[in-house]
Length: 230
Image (cartoon, rainbow, N blue to C red):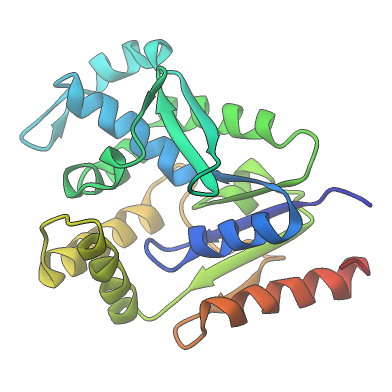
């Protein structure tokens, strides 16, 4: 059976990664969270004091990109992959508010996107991969077998993110999260390089009122219809 390449794009906190993980588990595919990779670079910049008072020292960061090695390692206990930065697991650190506040500004840098797009394309050379992000169906995998554009009501997205951070004991507020999502949406959709847009051949999936199980079934039915598999 052909190993498919599945691209999932959409706004922050709309459930892209949840859907991608569930699909990967169901299909026994590799899941790659491209957003985590950008968060990894943002974390590196913060740790190395390349961001001061919200200002990115762009030239210094670009000059040090070759020092950054990002890789995913499957965690058997969590049934998902951890992100390693130069051999160190940073899966928890990259979800903290300070990284979320800067990641969209990191993602607009041409050199950063070039480095990560190249890495992402190599990961998907042989199919059997599900990748989520902002430009997967338009830039990384323009010939993906399945392209999804996931969206949800902004209020619902903020509430989901708030609950997620509470479970991780990360101190924040719904007001701050809403403001952060609004800022990230603006940056993601208006940046000059690889802005967040729906690919012409992508299927839009509004999961505002869908359960985790129902959105998974929607995609599985789509795959079965298109490829006569499952």
